[in-house]
Length: 333
Image 1 (cartoon, helix red, strand yellow):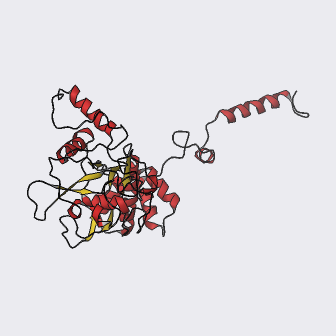
Image 2 (image 1 turned 60 degrees about the vertical axis):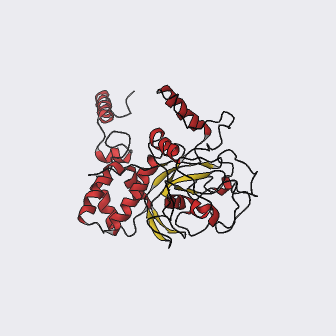
Image 3 (image 1 turned 180 degrees about the vertical axis):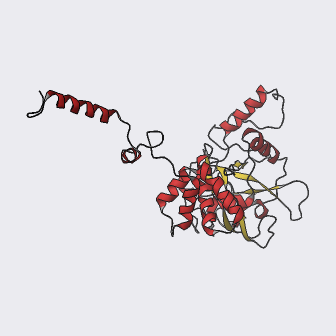
């Protein structure tokens, strides 16, 4: 029935008008109010140049603005690159680039690895080349690092891949059938460790200053957790079971970036060579093993200060390694 006082014609016209209104597309203002813009499901992203302008004008920029910029890192990064080419010292752009780089690197972090952002650190004395025995500060680029030492299981997987490729007769690669799969692989020479890092993982062995950066960040502390040795945080002599353990068995000793076993369990090969009067090819070892005492800490920081060097073609039952992978570059202009 039509409303009282209205004719059937006016009711029909009213219903037709209502149908037209319901069928009409929403205007831009209505779409924004409903949260539908662009693809009909989310707000349309602001142009990269406008977002960068907003960042440079803000004092200080809001966390919400930073989140918007990082959410569009593929579009924003080339714009930042272009502006930095014209004004390389612009502090706002430099800060923004660092934030975008961190976002990009975290987005591409490989499984089983931690992200260590770029930063400076105070080097121990003696320091690795090219800094020399006097120590000093070093700037370390960002990198990914294995959360733990390379395990027996991962090593065996690589050996199987070599065998399938026709290298079943390859000699010199250790494979202890009794070694637990979750323990660090040891007895590996520097040459073998470097080959695994390069061929199996597309990475390399860490340099000594990269180990130091992963261990303590920009802090000057001796240990990942602070200045004093704490029982139960590292598998060192007198502070552990006196043997190798499964990787990650001491989670309370994690570094600021989440890496485990950087101190103790198995010592680890580095990419930093000896250079102080050594004969032959030798690379330094970092982190100490279950055979090393916690104090003085300088004894486990590097083999240069620990024991007679190990040749690159030699392995030891206390010596393993982990892999470093360099992160991808930000998208360019």
